[in-house]
Image (cartoon, rainbow, N blue to C red; front, side):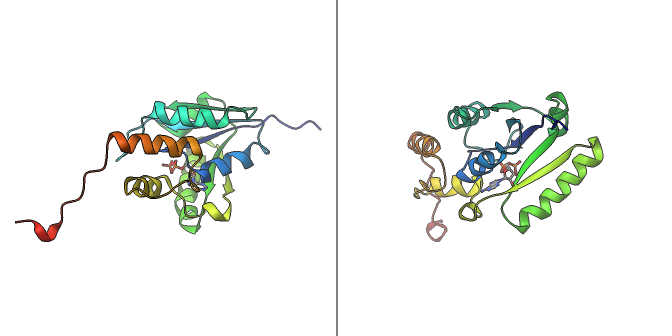
Length: 175
Ligand code: ADP
């Protein structure tokens, strides 16, 4: 029996891509014939990088991975998946909190279009890593070298040098 070719899309905001996302991608390449990392272009509140910048950082990281590509997309993930003729949507899981949200999302997507979602659990050391946390810690000057790939770390530093986060006013000193 020949095995069916399986194409997966890995949709997300990736603002920016973290070592947790990359860990999921590294596991997924062993399971799927083709993997498209799909950066959502819909406006994200407090976004740090433009979709083009996010795609660029991911492209640098997957350059040597056969069968893996990256692009950005607009609108509904399920519509994008249909356009790409994807067999599955890939999502990463960190914790039970993720399961709660992802379960509803996956059920909705399957109810709407019949597409299956496949989940991959991250390594334990990235179980608490999120792009939101990365943006916050970076803005406060924290060391993130263990949580984001080197190219992302460098971009974060450049970005924050250009646009330092304004100091929050001290409420105690307000008139
Ligand atoms: P979204 O805004 O769509 O949740 P994200 O870029 O935050 O996009 O995440 C994309 C996917 O990667 C989601 O399935 C999310 O649960 C998963 N993910 C995020 N951080 C990690 C991590 N540290 N380890 C594993 N999966 C993760």
